[in-house]
Amino acid sequence: MPASDTKPRQPYVEFPLTAHQNGQWCKKIKGKIWFFGVWSDSDAALAKYLDEVDEIQAGRDSRKTGVVRVSPNELSVSDICNLFLERQQSRVATGDITSRHFSDCLKSCQRLVEHLGKFHRAHAECWGHSLIFDSLA
Image (tube, rainbow, N blue to C red; front, top):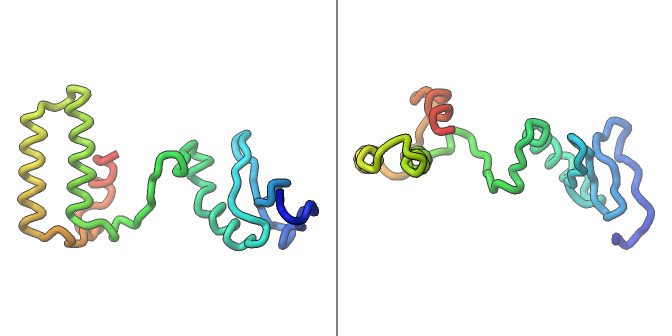
């Protein structure tokens, strides 16, 4: 319980969060109460809310999945190869592809990384951003 039992007022009229009795700012979304930060830092709570609300409304909980959002331009060729290989590994497990095919994919990714360098930025606009990231999903 916070030091004061008196809930603070919202910082301004349109503030989308409510002060919860546990000392945090919250919002009820899709029938569940979500917490976004402590009363003493309403700006940080609002920023966290704005960052997460679309995912929550879409039914995805990045807090549980450990998903870290990055810009496609922050990914290296090595990162994309690793994402691709993880996807291919799951396809081997379900029988969609053979282990031989996975081995060929692995060799191709290794050659690509050797040629371009491990930390070479992928520059999604050059690689066809939607094609790459849609196929990895």
